[in-house]
Image 1: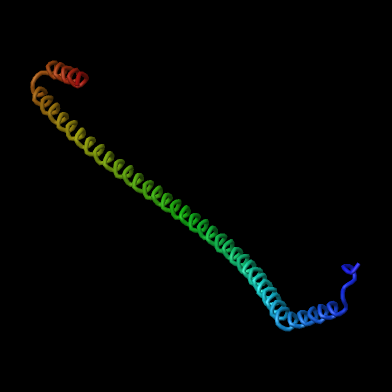
Image 2: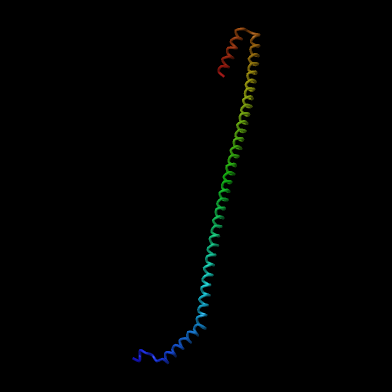
Length: 164
């Protein structure tokens, strides 16, 4: 049963070796490993904080972008309304100008027609006067002559006037 019960010297030697190994590992290995783990933990924590800060900045930028987009849309709508108002104003001015021009043309046409009417009436009066003078002249010539001939002449002139 020697296999199951170890030799005391071997047991003490192994215990001392284990304690020495434990001391050396504690002195030279665990401190650097723990400091490396702590450093890595701090790096990860710093990266997480940076990511959180970047996320907040991204949200702020998105909010600013939304605000700028809303302002741009409002400005676009304002410009479109102004353009429509200007177009309607120009259209109304053109209608008014057209109405004024049309009224002036109608007025000028009426004046021209009135002038031509007066000229035609004056011409008719002149022709009537000339015919009256001619008839009077013929009547007076005939009057010096015969009464029956005079009446026949007046009847003849009246028939000529009715035909014309």
